[in-house]
Image (tube, rainbow, N blue to C red; front, side, top):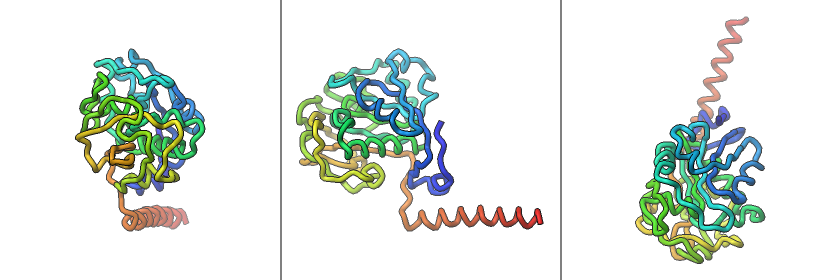
Amino acid sequence: MKTITLAATLCFGLFSTMSQAATFAVFGDNEIDDFINGISGFTATLVSDSELATDGFLDSFDAFVYTRDGLSFGTSLSSAAAANVQTFVTGNSVLLNADFADAVAFDGNVQSLLTNALDFSVSGAGGGYIGEFTGAAAAFDSNSDGLEALGLFEGDAGTLGFAAGGSATAFSSSGIPFGDILLDGVVTPDNPGAVEFGSAITGFDPANVVAAFEGGNPAILAQSTVAPVPLPAAAPLLAGGLALLGFIGWRRCKRAA
């Protein structure tokens, strides 16, 4: 289970995830699960559709990662598995609308992006979700690849393919809230090597688009169960919390004396 520092508790809207341990159920075997297991405190477990179709299976995890096997276009969840994922995902969600997994092993920008997405997915109130490529397309209300639609995000995903939706071009920040979190340490505009397949998205909510490819098609989308706290308000909140703890400590010391 995840543990959060005092600073994150007092100022949770900043999504501080220092000293956080988390478990991830991963559907799809590629570089992503290996990368997660290489992060201190994070554990990734490859899971099957039959396990996901078992009621309550996901309850022991903090977030679900839906990706694809190797260089394949991925596999659809069964209707039972999809229904359980829908029930589980009540927290923060991130969609990576391209084959970002193909660059995880060697691209520092993509590594920073995925680390931020992992942190973000377990910083909300409930089960988190990360969808990469297949998992991104499946997360919308509908898609053109016959994937069981999860309906986690508004919109329709077109057919997954080479350069679809501008996925072979550079992506840039759109400036929405949470962008500073998900793009922390990520230099944009950026066109990562080996990231060139994706999907054209229509009917999406612009408020969810963290970064877009050239032409405006979403590259990274996110939505959260916790509203971000503006920095000017966050500092007094944290200071007030620390002051309260200090006062409690002073009272205890005074009583002991």
